[in-house]
Length: 613
Image (cartoon, rainbow, N blue to C red; front, top):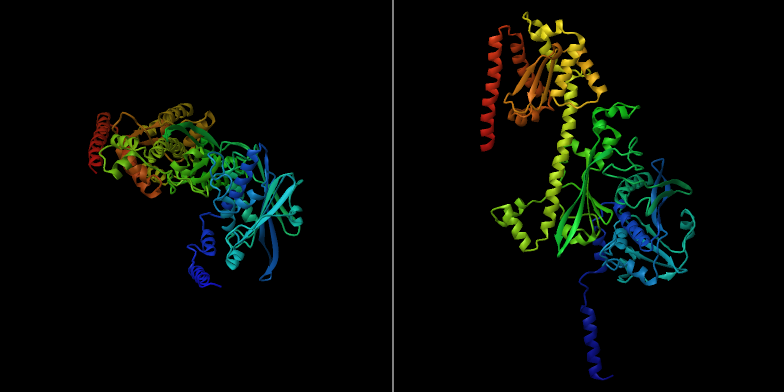
């Protein structure tokens, strides 16, 4: 051998010796197991994406079957079962040899450049699979040929290979064929997860319960018309078999997994349904916004919907708890939900559960809204305003910020257009829900069903006094019909909109109550008084003025605290007794004028204080 050849060989050996991969494959795969999937339900959703998209491409209703195999064992003298393998089967289009090999390569999915449809990024199958298990086997068939390949994380780490094993002709494993319901059709795919090292839910009941809630919400627009999703568990024999029902966070549809009685009928009513035009890349896109709210009837009379148990408030009911789990705005891309977004939500407020909202858009806006490659979030879609941009960019006004963003084709501008509309509509729906709450509270103010501590104390004090007032005179001289009519007029003045049946019951409750006092609040427009005093039907009624800054900035904040609110009630009740007992009409008129002047002066000073505060 010549010296030149020997020298070249030595150089090559040295090059090989010092070659070092920048990213060792086993370390990359280990890091990718922590790839942002929230749990197994969201990982399974990626596989269902592939199935549904494949079915849509061939215009076929897709039957997806999510199958668990459990193994029983004796743990601490107790028989326990845990999931050993999970499979997802579909009867969609299937893959040929080349497509199958690409499907298990990261970022090489066939739909990664798609501009529409629920699949796009090409990361789903391998990413989702390794987030839950160490081995994924895939069988796919079409045109009379079935191919199989796999990824095994432990094997890759051991053998240091970095290519997907070449798919081989194969037959479907009999142990899985036996679990698949119905006849195996001419095309389809079977994905099997084994060595489940990251599975949070160990038993099929917990796994399927969470899958149905999440997957049922994600694919609510596909379930029924475009796909059917079966959940089945086997432990020697079949132990669970059920179809996934849709989960509608707007509660406007029927036949859902919502607890009875709203599983078969809507629980909310529509509040808003419109589109928001946004400009991006020289084109106008429509972003759709839907908002719904709980029916007033349920919130005011929730216990009538349940015969087996009495609940303390509507949020404690099965329906209320279901609503709490769906709290947030449903972000929908191409008909498939990405996430529940809570950036617009007051998560500390229990009444937030009683509205629902959905923002939907096409994949053309993925970049604008920051859609992640695992399709679990739209990271840029958040509460954002022109005022925020003006502050960030050091601009003097919102109009300057608007012009600045238009000039620069700023990607945040469509987000602002959507955000400002959402904030406006949510403000309106919250106002309606607040009216519902206040209506229920005011109704209770008249009711004898509840123990009113302040009203009781005021009544006992009034009874100790020798002097008789206008309320006593009415109580002694008016007929029951006249008393009822006066209370009815007060209900109307307070703005309580009730059915005829509810009105009659409320009047009856008020007249039968041993409490002389009715203490409530109402919007007394055009009046500067802090509170009003009237004597309907022989009762002594104190009405706190909701339009006065005293109510808006103090009473409304403490109304849910019984002790503090009772102190306010007793303070005004003392004045009401003084005014009611006064026999001198001229002095009584002076007291009324004093109450008006006091309210006016307080309003002026509070307004000035709050303006400068």
